[in-house]
Length: 333
Ligand SMILES: Nc1nc2c(ncn2[C@@H]2O[C@H](COP(=O)(O)OP(=O)(O)OP(=O)(O)O)[C@@H](O)[C@H]2O)c(=O)[nH]1
Ligand SMILES: [Mg+2]
Image 1 (cartoon, rainbow, N blue to C red):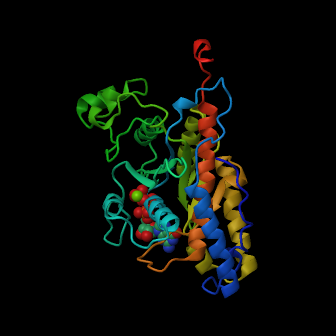
Image 2: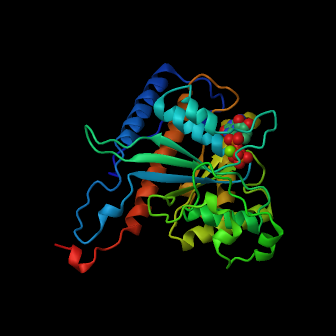
Image 3: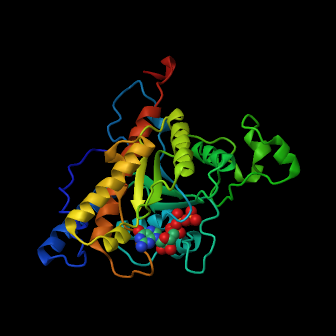
């Protein structure tokens, strides 16, 4: 994606705990910046300058795939909804997406149970070619065990079909087979698997979503170890810059009294995540999702998730660039 110069972000509301008060001039400025982000994302086109004659650009997919991972309840499905709302400047999601996406509610439903793909932005041909943006929601981890690691492995390879329940076979036979070196079709039901996944099926950008209002992020040693291992696995597959999304910033704001105190708390949280997961600070994003039937658009929510989406599309593009192969000698003219 062409690195367009984006506007300088407005002073972050997060340094102003009384968040509902935004002056009208500030609101205008933010609206302009949000508008510009929407335009930049609408124009997104994977690697627009395809000028290296040796590279096989025909392998590039028409859409970039963003994949969500993270503990159950951290806000992944809410993030998909929030991104859609922010990008399309709408309160109501299309019925198809509303039905597909399950957000954990007060009825204590199970949350997401199937691998769910949502088209955030369609690809276009006219008036100019642009790429699509797809986001893939997954069932959150609960047990942080070998089974969930193997499920993540399968998803990372782009092998899972839309709306598939990613779960190992539960027969005694399958249990006996449970070894990492066994083939996936022995461990997982074959009907959930794609036969020959290509670069278009693989994730191109990984987002790890955690609840940023918790005392510890990730929550405890076991969880930290689990996600470190998943990130190691991802690195071995060429994903070097996973992004970390910390949700529920509104809850952190509610707890802290003063601006100074809030800034310190956020810094400490980000520092903790950086240390625990061994990722660069610039890869950590603090956001708030739309939640609890919030029907009014919120400029701060929109602005921060759109920046996250823009960054994710760029990360996806970098991954794709790294995956481009050279043409064979006879293909080069
Ligand atoms: N206050 C607040 N609530 C949030 C935020 N993000 C998500 N929630 C709430 O957190 C709960 C869990 O959100 P989900 O989006 O279902 O979480 P999930 O990660 O998809 O959960 P699984 O599908 O089980 O993995 C829901 O009740 C959301 O409304 C946020 O930023 N702020
Ligand atoms: Mg979910």
